[in-house]
Image (spheres, rainbow, N blue to C red):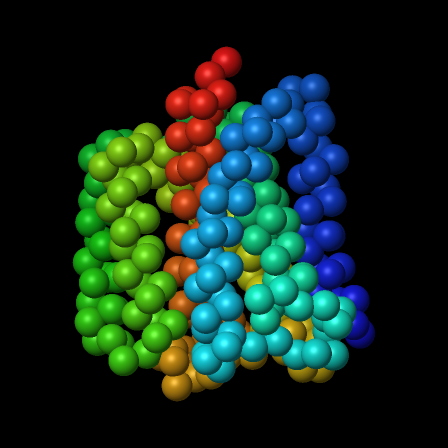
Amino acid sequence: MKYLYLLLDLSSLSVPFLYSFHPKLKLYKDWKSIGLALFSTMFIFIPWDAIFTSNGFWGFNEAYYLDYRLLGLPIEEWLFFICIPYACIFTFYALLYYFPNLGLSAKNTKIISLLIAFFLVVLGIVYHDRWYTFTVSVYALFCTLAAQKWNPGLLAKFYPIFVVILLPFFLINGTLTGSFIVDEVVWYNNDENIGLRLFTIPVEDTIYAFALLLTNLFLVEFFKKRLFRK
């Protein structure tokens, strides 16, 4: 099914996009900050993606995407970095709207950040020879420490909400990696990761999702405060 990857992108975006106009949420008012954050993040993740694809660290099944590529990546992969983060950003702010007190204490946030940092350092050292594991560990470590230093309040809310976001993440990424279809949309070279999977999802993908969303939210908050103050 050549349209599968495109349908996954658009279906992930559809409901969050429509509810962005909800009279209480009004997420559309922050589109400038969100759009700038999305495209800024793509400058990090698209080159990373393109380099890994060209080196065979991962790739895409031609049966599930349209025959259009840019920098060696399917157009649907470019859309992925818009649709999926936007859906997650919407979920983050929607949950905060309905549960304004959702969040951890400053002390617990710092403890969790230190534990995550320790885990990522160990993971990166032990698997320094696996490119996906190593690079995603290093980048997620940078994101965690940067957010803890410059916006710990964001992390206090992000940690519990990320656990919730993991549920739709497993559905979408599970489909991409072959949980619910005959073959995978995205394949991985297990020589470049630790080979541990959650269902069909490489465990590194959860770290990747963590870093991708945290980067976007950190930038959204930064742009809202510095460029688009209300």
